[in-house]
Length: 116
Length: 413
Image (tube, rainbow over all chains, first blue to last red; front, side, top):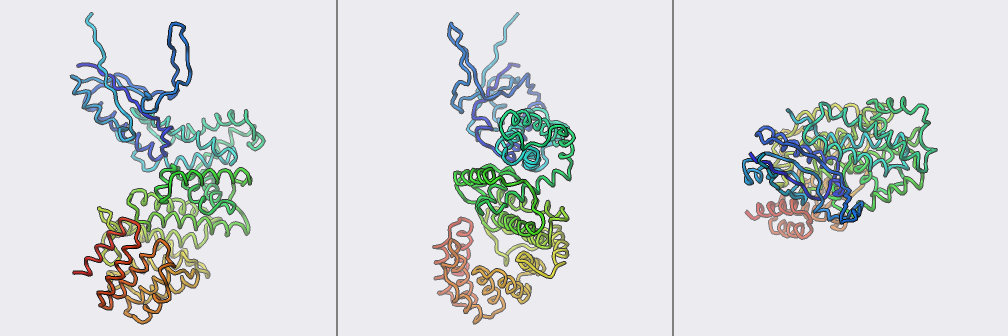
């Protein structure tokens, strides 16, 4: 099995101004997705949700910029690390990502494995 | 594991509860801070519950809400408006008490009555109520009330501004002020329900939710002995009777099915029963309201085993009583239609002749539709078709347009 990182990008629920009802419906879909994955043995190695604010440190002088302006479509909101046989398997898992209709997207990156 | 969040509308209802409790603690002038804080709680819950749901989501939310109170104390104390906050010595005790079920209900009632404060614009009241008590987003309110989202945002801003500027208090009025305010509360709930029941918008889901919210809020009032009155019971009965046939009113394709062609076996009996028991309580008075008569009419329709066996005479009586309380053209139009069912063509014609399309504004199609019905009953097909064409020219909603088109096809055949 290979490991893949699914990276979620898109505007946050906060920014989208979803109502509590809509938030609850979203959550139920996420929960269903997560349940499906654990049932199908697609072990989620880890997963986290991220705060909106971005601080970026760059350059040889290590210049830190707080609250970097990022286009909401590009904003990373969270990630999962999942197991799959190959990229097609990972793509299949990503089909159930609940927020495509909110214009969010999933980026799939294979995690490198090294021989000892 | 079972999805515990299958609890319908848990977030929506908790939103209203939390906002109203927090406003009771901190005062209406902090409404925006409070709404943001509560909204934030749900976003956090949604993110943390994605993979694992708490055993008791409701208790979890309440616990978070209590913590929110403490956060807000800190936040608001460091800003202005501190003098409005309850004395800090009894904070802990007070918070525990305010989270008791009866106190939560009391806070929500205060919120409902505040939404209908006479200083707020009539158009803003319903939007404000849907936002603060039912946690609808501006977008949802806009789609429910067939308005632009921008308009709703403006109304909400205006309502909040008036509440702050006029220092409206977060209370249920007492004494003589109570019945008057209750009247406007019931009027807003009636409007909310009718938007859901009669508007025939595309989205059946939002319509059901509007009806559901109106009923839930009405029930909250009924729970309170000092506040409720016989009008409240009558309004709730009316809502039950209408809701009992909400499902059968629309087909799956969102096609309108008129009373004549509805499958009466689909009417939801438990709601009819609930409506009946409320009606018994509602008539415990000598003064009847419009809700009493409208409920009586709805009930009469439900009683009839078939459209043909409807007691039109009784219905006409109720309509006449209703008209004496609320002399509106739409009621007159209904009286004309009821006369038609009783084959009183002359009387029906006279009433229709008194009316004109301009009496009905955007609903002028109802007027032309009534004329079409009249000519159809009299077997004057050509005239019926002309009126039907007029009705079609004046309709502005897809579902209603399709309904009229279907009717026209049936006339032609």
